[in-house]
Amino acid sequence: LVGLTELALHCDEGCGADFVRTAMESGGAPGATISTYACFPTGQGGSKKTSPAREACSMIVSSAQREEILRAFKEMHVLDNECTRGIETREIFRAFSYKAS
Image (cartoon, rainbow, N blue to C red):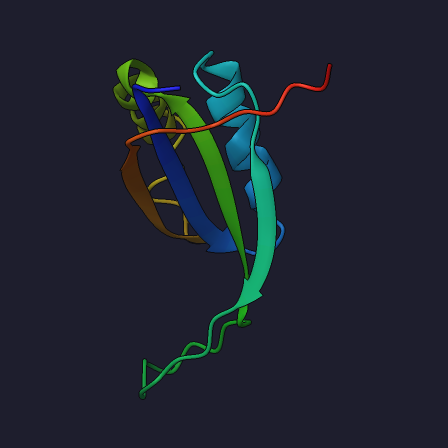
């Protein structure tokens, strides 16, 4: 499999499912994997206390659909939402799939 991009959206715990739904409804993401992790600040990052609980929403999409999904995120205010912590895009050189016989 070639021509794929991974979109990894990092957000506060509890927000990921709605963000993934936005990507799926845009028609670009057939599915996603949501994992949880903790993010602890390394310095004095202001007075607002936030939970370290985070979610990483990983979606493997066609590289041609990347901009469409990012546009949907922008239109739905995902990227400027207060619980969004960032988004990473990674070009996937080659992916493999397993099909049981």
